[in-house]
Amino acid sequence: MSSNNYTGEQIEVLKGLEAVRKRPGMYIGNTAERGLHQLVYEAVDNAVDEALAGYAKNVSVILYKGGACSVEDDGRGIPVDLHAEEKMPSVEVVMTILHAGGKFGKGGYKVAGGLHGVGISVVNALSEEMVTRVKRDGYQYEIRFSRGLTTQKLKRLGRAEGQGTYQWFKPDTEMFETTEFHWDVLAKRLRELAFLNRGLAIVLRDERGDQLRERTFKFDGGIISFVEWLNEKKDPLHPIVSTHNERDGVDVEVAMQWTDTYNELIYSYANNINTTEGGMHLTGFRTAISNAVNAYARKRGMLKESESNLSTDDCMEGLTAVVSVKLVDPQFEGQTKTKLGNAKVRNIVYGLLNERLDFFFEENPKFARAIVDKCMQAQRAREAAKKARDLSRRKNALDGSGLPGKLVDCKSTDPKESEIFLVEGDSAGGTAKGGRDPNTQAILPLRGKIINVEKARLDKVLANEEIRTMITALGTGFGDEFDESKLRYHKIIVMTDADVDGSHIRTLLLTFFYRQMKPLVENGYVYIAQPPLYGIRKGKKQWYAYSEIELKSVVGEDGKDFAIQQYKGLGEMDAEQLAVTTMEVGNRRLKRITVEDAVEAEQIFTDLMGDKVESRKQYIFEYARSVKNLDL
Ligand code: 0RA
Image (tube, rainbow, N blue to C red):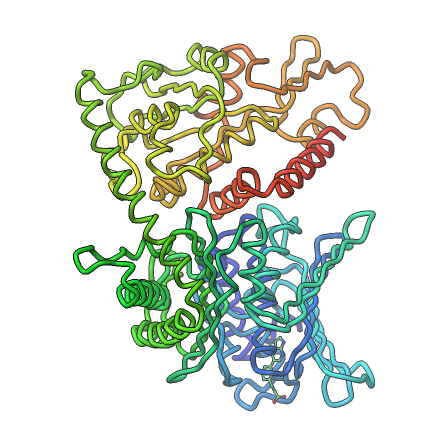
């Protein structure tokens, strides 16, 4: 197309796509790693929609050398007929006009929430190059684009069997901070989608390295397989309970299983979107469980008339569950648009699950009794924890300031400008003390391994001195009584060595924060310090490298004349080095912890500390391997 004869439609296209390129964050969240992966999810969501509509059975995602990605499905293929209104092929409309996807009214459950469902044209606008191939009616068609503009009109390539859509795109390096896709990130989401869409086969293939990597995710058990997988390393109290039903246009699937652990692990979804902020489906789910458990406990006399009901939290202890609803007009609310707002969904989930649980308890008295026992133990532990907390509070009130002796506090009393470094070991604590800015930076050295939070109940966790010290220093309290307004430092910075012990302590701390002081994680107060991996010297010049890539960029491939020191622990730096590289505002790098990071830490934590020795071995084996890779 030459630039001096735009038609009216083309100007519209330009306006729409310009908006996307001007403010990409509005469409895909950000232009960092998260936004980059969002492009793949967008294309995959389209393919999964085609599967939900009952046409596609296979989806394949391929990562190519050079930064491109393709998503292919075996659905009906995007229509190639002339679009009457826009006067171009329908496929070109879908690819170039913002929000065009919905115009076709494919029927079924359209995924359209949060950052998803913005339309494949957004992917096109943010790609240097994009190629769309469609197989339909015995032919293959192709159309090409660059940065959202058509560079090759739709053409028929020749006869072809079968049907489907192939989307190849190369994210625009001008738009993204990074254009490197991560296997683990994609694998996690594709696995999740395969769990949520029973029977759908999703292949992930990585052709970038010397060795081909490929995995197929396909689960004939759907979310039942999901719960099985989540509980793989735990000891369940009963076989998985599940239900799948439709009522009033809402499709509801639940799979659940109590284990002998002490934490709830509940994933909820609406139209395949992980509703991390919960919503009506989760409320209905929780009420159904609480009511069914209490009703059974009363009926069988396990709860006496004089005793109070089990709280919903008591009933959730050790429960792993997946709640997935699909509906035509989901309303997504909340800060991150991941809270389901449709009120009718609450009663629908409540009704279906309550019925199912009543039936399960009646049919399986042995399992029902084990579950109620478990919930009653949780209730007793909660009461014991409350007593312990009251005791410890009284004790603190007696010893003056109440601040722990090991804390090297900062001068400022303004939490907004105050930071606390949680430092592994007394000796690194000393170095950090020497390198800090005493006005705004406090140091708390943590000794030894923190208590095993997975196995211990709240009352025992409190008995651990390291945990108590930290809680007192932070000022917020914990659990039900957590009070964010009392937080004494708005940056909590975990500073540990780059070795296995350091990684354990970091995992423990993140897991503790996530479980007992969740708003700290949710509201972004928790950070990980990033000490350098290498110190490099040449003559009088000194550099620091925080990754292998940075090291190479300083010393080149051979690295003659450079003296390279690999830091294995914080202790290998003196106070000034630690300050300059890791602590000083302006020079340092901090990684802010997200809820996703914390959830991952929790999973690793369960692997590490759970009862199953096998998974601990597996973790250490994998960790050792990744450390070895670092050394290469
Ligand atoms: C609109 C209508 C029809 C299919 C699709 C869109 C469709 C879109 C995508 C995006 C990725 N894969 C897709 N597969 C199908 C159906 C038209 C008909 O009746 O054949």
